[in-house]
Length: 432
Image (cartoon, rainbow, N blue to C red; front, side, top):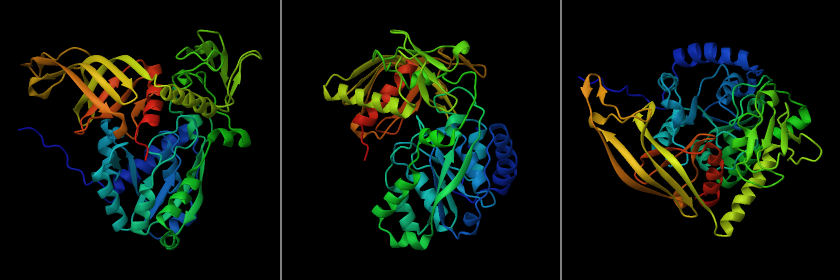
C-alpha cells in the first residue's frame, strides 16, 4: 500500500520542538555564528499584545534568521515562498515549525486562510511583503494585501530594517561574504493606531517604513564584506556594458581578479568593492556607482525596446516539471519565445507510465525493477503576460511560470538572459 503523504496543519501554532529547540536554539544560533549576525531581541515587541504582523525588507536567504534573533522569545509563523518547501527535509521541518508556504505572484487562497487563522488566535506573522529577495540592495514596491489584512485583524505593525544581509549573501552571488549583519525595528504601530488609519494610509505607512537601500546605508556606515569571488555572478544582473552598451558581454574576470567584471566586446572593466559599491578599474573605463543605478539604467533600456515595438527574445530551453512535492524533473526541450504579449514554449513534453518522468535528460526505463516507457509529445504552451505579476527566477539559471490551470513550468535557458526576461515581465505584466 502506498504511503499517504503527511498532512500538515498550515498556520498551526509553531511547534516548540521544531521552532525553539531545533530552529532558534540550534539552526539559527549556528548560522548567526557563521555569518556574524549581531542582533538582540526587541523588548517592546516582547511586550506587545497580539495579533502582530512583523514586516521587513527582504535582502537574502538569511533574513528569517535575522528576524528570528530580533524577535527571540516570542514565536510566530513565517510566510515563505512556496519554492523553499520543495527541498527535503527542510520543507517538512519548516511546516512543522509553523511556516506558511506562499506561491509567488499568484493568488494563493490556502496561504491567505492560514494567515487569517494566525491572526484570529492573536498570533504573530512574519512577512516579507516584497515577496522576493532584493536584486540590487534596494526595496521593491508591493501591493496593499498586508495593509488590508492588518486592518481586518486589528494587528499591530512592527517594521524592521536588516543591514548587511544583502552584502553577506546577495541573490546573484556565489557563497558567503564575511561581514556583519544587524537589524532593528524602525517603526512600531500598536493595533489601536492601526484601527484609526484607512487602508490607504496604512499602506503608505508600510511602504515608507520598508523603504531601504543597502547601497546608501553602506555609504554612510562603511560596511565591509570580504570574499575572493566578490563579483562572481554579478554579470547575470549587470548584463549591459555601461561603456559600449552591448548586451550579454559582461564576464566575471575569474579568481585572480575576483572583484572584477570585464566586457568581452570593449574591455571595459568594473570593480565590485567590499562595500558593495562599484568603480571603474581604470580612469578611462566606465561604471555606475552601485548596482541599483546599473539595474535602473538597464530597465530603462528594456522599456525603450518595448516602446519601439521591437521586443522579442528566442532562447533554447529545457522544460522541467514537478516530479513530487520536493523535486523537479526534466520532461522536455524546445524553444521559448518572449514577445510583448506572451511567453511561448514550443517543444516536447514527456510523460512516463506510473507517473515517473525522466531525469537528467534521459528517460527512466527501469524504476524499482519495473520497465517503463517514456511517451513524448510535441506541445505549444502560451502564457499571457498581462495576467502575470512577476516570475520566480534563479538568475544565471532559470525562470518559472504558472499556466492558466495552475500547472508550474520551469525553464532552463541561457542564464545571463534571465534577468532581461524578468525585467520584461515586470514592464509588460500586471503590476497592480
